[in-house]
Length: 119
Ligand code: 5GP
Ligand code: ZN
Image (cartoon, rainbow, N blue to C red; front, side):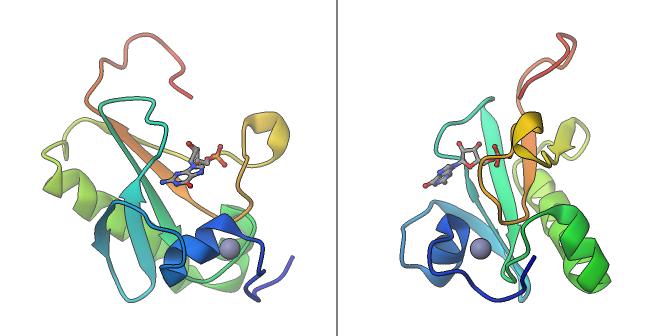
């Protein structure tokens, strides 16, 4: 677990602008961009600028960064017109579907939620 920026982290490269992304919002501590492979009509990833491998690790080192990720996700939900109907999903560990080990929250909306799992 490290708070340094690993040179091989995809989301660190997106935060730095070294890899392009469809950015929809940002704050001093976090950025939000559209998922390259959306699971629903609205699928935005909200990522702290600080590198931590999981949301739990982020919570352990910075309550402010953790809060900011969810604050920005809520702002994006409002921006996208889905403040009243969305999910925020966090996958932790490869067995739970985490593929990028830089903390992030999935904001998902624009689809019916009655059919169980979406990710
Ligand atoms: P995880 O499975 O780790 O919770 O979520 C990682 C997400 O990152 C996946 O939904 C995947 O589609 C998305 N993703 C992977 N590579 C890229 C990329 O280069 N750009 C963007 N915008 N999303 C990506
Ligand atoms: Zn990173």
